[in-house]
Length: 368
Image 1 (spheres, one colour):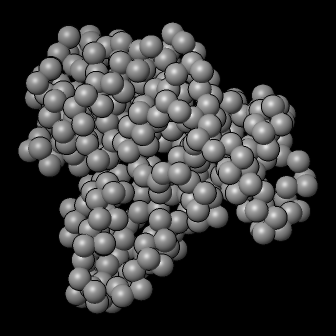
Image 2 (image 1 turned 90 degrees about the vertical axis):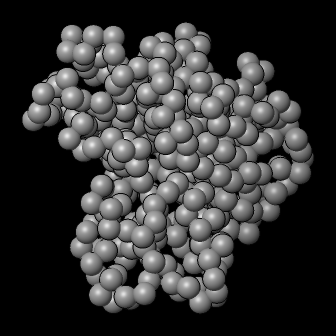
């Protein structure tokens, strides 16, 4: 189900009283429930979450780390996922039937994930098999719906994260001659390029008009990139890099591989969220950095490293709007509903979908 369909059917909106509570009241109540529920409650928090939420996370991390921690967790009865919809789906797939996963605000979706629906993907697969036979294996970024993960698992593929994309693409090439990479074309392109696949060996599948965008002979295609992108990372531009180079000639530029190829190529370093965090942590005091990733994280890194000069690569960048849906009032509302025995916003992946989606996730986890 598309996240917007979920929202349309969800009439249980947050009560007004939570919006009128003071920050102190909200925080005190969250702490009290965490203490009361103890190990029965587990709150994983993605790096892009607001500080007001991340302060209550039991673990913070990127998609790979949180997927692994969800798979390992067997104590918690209630998993309140502070992230977006596809992450909560992944947690539900990897945890036991006795555990329940909750998303504090069902509007916390991912525009990238919604750029590849199952109907488009099945149509594309049929046409691509007509062109390339059985020489293709599908990979999907974890930023995808459970239905897409299930499609990939059913067809022998795996999920990837920005942390392990090179490892998983290398693995995929040991399985088949060609790769269909969903749904982020930029991560797919940058990863394949790093593994010495040339740009003229990459084609783009356009799901809107069901066509393969490629100028050469199709037998030369090694990677088929789904025409999707991250709405945040696509907003970092070559002009941003030019501005930083002119204003701060000695500043290092580090970006996420969801950025466009030309931005990654002109940066000094690129890598996953954890890669960026670790690079800044290990850098010398007094060093200067322009970071091309989500703004909540950039602001947090700036606060944590007052001994360094750090700016956003795009000074006009906004936080991820859907990730930002999770806030302190929604977190408390979710926790109080659990405490009262009348929980809402439970994330439950259809069992048939979950079986195949888990195949794709386990294929990744076995390589990581």
